[in-house]
Length: 317
Image 1: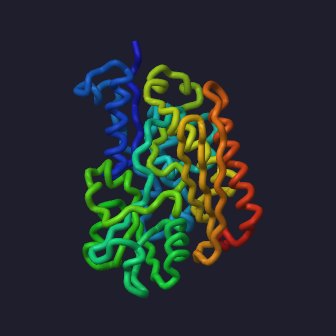
Image 2: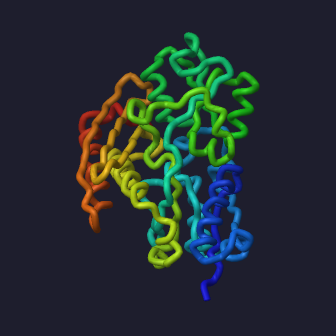
Image 3: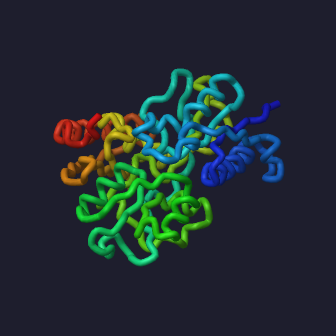
């Protein structure tokens, strides 16, 4: 008999919403009805360092891994069996013994523009305050609007919306996927074109992280989505080639039509003055090997950008 699959998740409202979506999917994959989801796939709440420290950018306190470290320790110690993360929060390298075992179908990957006064970034008045904690969003926005006053704005979605409401910023940028999962998809004033201004690698996708020995569990196969796996492989390939972390402003967006994978990647200087872009395509094999082809496309484009951008695209220590 299949033992319960214990799901580790952060305690934020968005993390719980995402974990809840996957809890129901995992329960179904285990053959259980929705009302038995908590019994067969219980949620275990774990507070991470990234959740506790809200007044500084992630790059100042250790990077993306701060949202995953405590959860990964719990998995390695056998206290949980899997974890649900936002793919864009996943570092390029995982701890030994752990893997991204499944990626379900992706939500809309675009960035959303929210403001009480303006429809788009271009509509903001001269010198307007834009709130974001993302170095990528900062660089991309300053590239389009060098006059903007970019303010560091961390916190969960509710906190950021409250700060916008209170007038602490004239506009904020958030992932549309998170807003939709929270039932707030009606709030954006406009959406950012993902080809013109690529989102974070993996944005909109969820990662199901497990121990390496559990990678082939049958319930994992039931929740994998091939096209999402391939586009994310390409985007994260570019991130790996660019040594992607919170210290490098990187955007990447992959899309599949038929057997053709198209990828656009950009890297910027943190002040938005310098912007480097590459686009490419690859024909995906119908069977095995497609993920390697997708990742190789990302690695190749990322390597070209790394060579061209050099030190310009990295935040000084």
